[in-house]
Amino acid sequence: MTNFFLMAFVFVSVSACNRKQEVLIENVSRDTVIMIETEVTNPTLLRLSVQGNVNDSISISHIKLDWGEIDTVLRYDWYSKDFPIKYKANKATKGKLSIEYDL
Image (cartoon, rainbow, N blue to C red; front, side, top):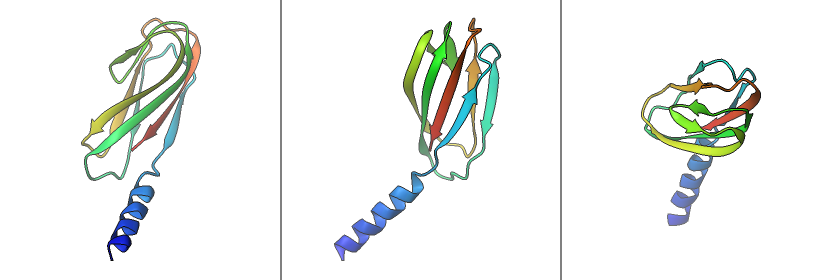
């Protein structure tokens, strides 16, 4: 009986983790706010995986990232259904970013 409940829990956990989406920022010189709408109803962990390159520092959701190659993961506790990804160019004029979000 215990194995049944453990297997049911694992199945629910795996299916709940399949909420990955990707956002591309091709014009890194322009500040942008991207609103993400979800169906999440409970507090959860929001994970932003940021990859790409820029020629100057940038900010994503108020976290400053240095120029050059970027490959980092930002984690937040999230309590709302929808969330914004706030991109601020600072002085960046060239580059490209991919932001994968996972709830």
